[in-house]
Image (cartoon, rainbow, N blue to C red; front, top):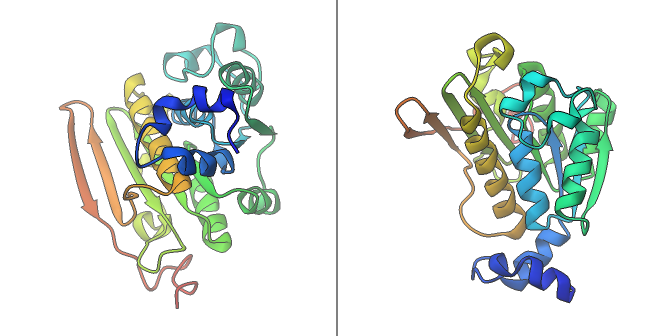
Length: 251
């Protein structure tokens, strides 16, 4: 059950008929893995913690650099030199001491990634490289766990939800195959801060929808954001029956 303190803390959320007490309880019992605590992972972690998702698994092997602070809003100047996980733990605990935080401070290999994915209900890929995205996608397909994937570079953002529990859902590999130019990193190509905040916030929203059980997730759809003109486009994405990752899983 929710305590009086929790009822007060989450009252504005509980007022929504799509959430209500039952949805808030589902969030309290929910578990999410956030892969990467940079520009995307920062708003994801902040909003999921504030919303009362009961257990957040935080995975990042990097340390905070001064160049991160322009967009990675979970960290501050005092965090420079700390691991991103420890910096995030400090901030999230201050925001919501009611939730459980589980740290993964080293790079996840195949076995540890599989275990981390298996331990949660939803996975948010907030990484900045293609090889990690591919590995996370494969682990989610194998475990049957929904994946919320976001990316942002320069002035362009992308977002989609891949849910192997749904017959018609593609996986990340169906869409991107063996690579795309989104593989460029922010240190190479640059990125505007509010764009990663926008994409990360939308990732957090999709996670809340999946965990609390309301709304229509962004499954089978790719949202494209053009920050230069403030335009949004949506593309339909179909599962590839011959996909080397999810094709055999779905027969």
